[in-house]
Amino acid sequence: MTISTIIQSLEEQRDRIDEAISALGGSTGTRGGRGRRSGWRLSAAARRKISLAQKKRWAERKKKGA
Image 1 (cartoon, rainbow, N blue to C red):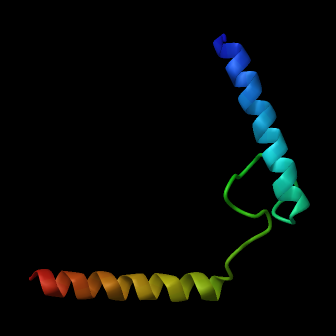
Image 2 (cartoon, one colour):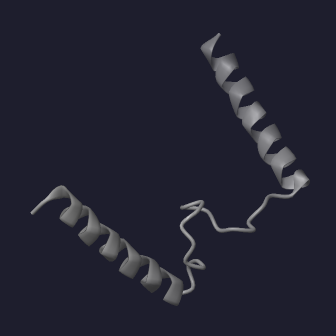
């Protein structure tokens, strides 16, 4: 088996898997942005809340290390 044949076979498998995921309601079948749903965004308030929580964790870690 040549490398190009293997690649073609893998791409066909990937296409079948993408179609199955789409059929189950996972994505629209586009290949861009794998791992994230398109249109999924955090609000400014949610980003701020996450940011403040992370800064608090960093401060606690820094305090323990001192």
